[in-house]
Length: 356
Image (cartoon, rainbow, N blue to C red; front, side, top):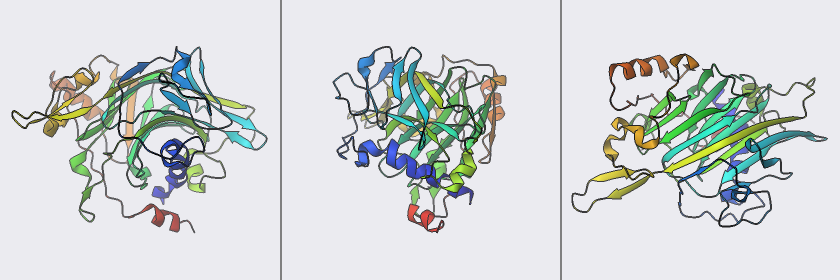
């Protein structure tokens, strides 16, 4: 039943976060472009990089608000997305990146808006098939961040990793990072890995394939009401609901800065060896991506006290083990395997069937 907790979230993501691709959003034609990741740094000081809902996009536009009424805007703090109370309930916000990302590093400074139960702030990388890489801040646990991923709309709450942060993520900007490589996927908070998944550990024997996100995906930020009528009761159970006694009429998450370092895979005809390059064109072996020095992806500059994060995960991720291994070696950061249990459900339709 815990797997079903994200069904409402999955439907929400498909409708909103991915609406720009599928045409489910009235603001989009439904035609998905070829992967065209653009490395960038945006501190949202230039209004021309952001387009409000329905506004014309220019060559400078990098992020677009997708929902109406539109509660996303550039403020003095950065890109601010709000969940606003109206006569019909709470209306949220979604902003997406105009290009597509297929592997690379996403680094963000975010202040969560999830100050009370029922409010969810999210960062997603989602593709057309329903695969998603997420970081979620849930109001029922306001001092933590959850790292999760899934494929084919098969969400598994039991595999989410919740990491507690000493600094209040709702009152201060904290740096988060997702390093998505062909062979591994790692989430960071305050400069420390909170979860790692290796592609080789996602092999589903029954389906004879890897259950690992690998397609070009759309980056989006959102804040939303878990108890909205469009969401399942299990989603509300996961994130809670905004108390009826709450006097707050607006909750806001703010993205202070976004850095996207695109990954590219090229073949050298001279030796037919594969190499992977980030925006700085540094090379590494694609076959040994889990052993490479990830400083090419901006990981070496962040140094936080180990006491700033504690990690709990039903999937078995152990932050203390990761930190211990860093102390044993001053070389490249090592990537740990996290066993991924193959889903017993073969399709999203099966999940829906379980609800009726």
